[in-house]
Image (cartoon, rainbow, N blue to C red; front, side):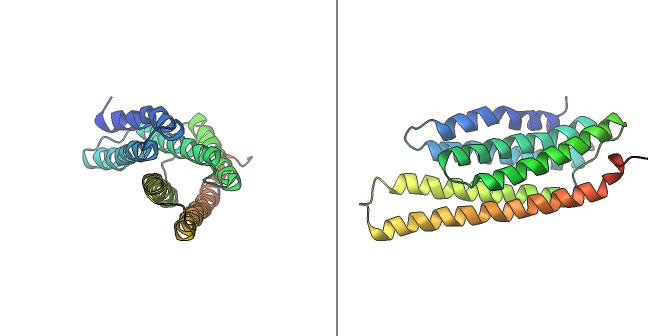
Amino acid sequence: MNLPNKLTLGRIILVPLFVALLLIDFPMHTAAALLAFIAASVTDLLDGKIARKRNLVTDFGKFADPLADKILVLATLLCFVQNGWCDCVAVIAVLFREFTVTSIRLIAAAKGEVIAANIWGKVKTVTQMVAIIAILVFRAAYDFAAPLLPASAPFESISGWLFWSGEALIWISTFFAILSGVIYVAQNYHFISEK
């Protein structure tokens, strides 16, 4: 197994650690989860660059890299819903998109073809990573500051602003998830159309 594929598998292995850090309540757990998520995101940046630069692109990588992204992002969004940090409707839309795209990939694979991610899928992934990291930064900062500052109207309004900023970022990333899904279906419709 080459280095890019090891990095992809490493990203999948980091998911349970990230989920545990995010959901188990201990001091600065959100900051620890943020670091784990950033580490996983770095593997996402590196695996593709290394694979292309060293000519190590494989069918396994084309399949596993987007799968690892999906596992990481969906696990995170589901944790956000559990924590009350994200609207479940956005997550349902993302799940629908991911199941649709994965189904088309499986049909193509059954026909002997591997479909690599397109630019819109990459835009979707970047906007999701930015939204998730921003929310984790907001929450880690809030967790750090809350015990130090007395509850007051200005502090509570800042926490409300952080929540709505995070929600807006999630919906922006959801828009790109839906857009990329529609484009993906349009570009690969021939795999599911009857002939």
